[in-house]
Image 1 (spheres, rainbow, N blue to C red):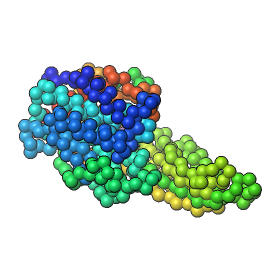
Image 2 (tube, protein in one colour):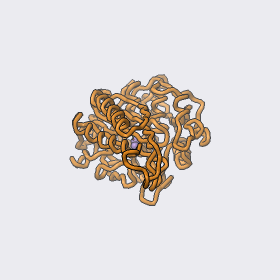
Image 3 (tube, rainbow, N blue to C red):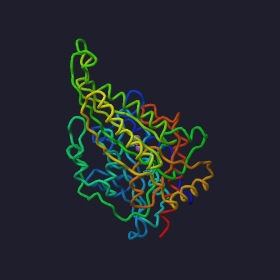
Image 4 (cartoon, rainbow, N blue to C red):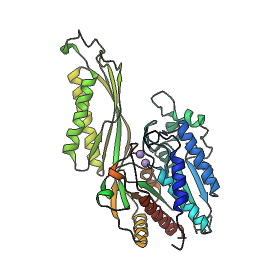
Length: 411
Ligand code: HGY
Ligand code: MN
Ligand code: MN
């Protein structure tokens, strides 16, 4: 719309500078939620939001909002953004291009001296990744009334530190309540984190919905004993039961549904010694599908497999479902806005459903929402080698700029 343009040099320099925060020596970043590196990233974003003339608000779970007034302050704002916390040794693009891309949209409008009809709000959500503090999308989940604040504050990392303590430690526990408020719509620009755009050699996708998923925590309790003299028929080996369940995940994904995916991503063994039969193994499960019934069936089946594995090995076990989110189609009006924006800009595109969870999952419960994807090279993400070509990031950000302007011009 009009001659608002992304300043690629500014945007790319900013991205490179931001990537230095928590940089690893293999081109990735290590900025887990509420870590010192995440704290530095947060302060940087607040500073850049303010430099762009945004009025910054931090809410009670550390979500960072930057507001730009429109012609009519009474109109509900257009919200857009993503997250800046990362995986442990994760990629530089996941979440970040959604926040820096949104900031660049603001800067481009500032350069063009354009005031939109509606107010604009850019956001960096807290604790999207959910690797240090489960569950993921915790900040947007509280904002969208999925979780209450006390639950969020109580979440513990593996060292027993709570989300609330760490939020206080890095001084990002804001006074503003984190709760739903009138929003016109929400857009999120994000890397695809899968192979489809690259396979189709396309620069951008309109995202039509997100998978539902379940996260679970399982603990097998057996009996530590000497690895040498203990006869095999006297063992209660928590690792054997765990390996049975890991194999069961593959059997379930192979038989329950075409798009079902299942992962055992985190395993902690105690006492974790070469010559001691594992007494305790705590591990996580992650099942996802665009069909909620398929996720439900997978969760039922894996619980049965856990029970059988414990019986076979004479173990006790604990099972906890940490979180469950339903699959959701995005708002058709917002999807159409993204498609119109792409078509007006003249780019080839496709439509995708997201296998990754995003803050948009929850925003979609309280306001019209959709997403824009740009390709991930080799379909890689949640890995230091995560990479997206800058030309594709530019396309995605231009689409975000157009989509935001379209929705923000509506009274
Ligand atoms: O798990 C996810 O899909 C996201 O990275 N939190
Ligand atoms: Mn992400
Ligand atoms: Mn992620």
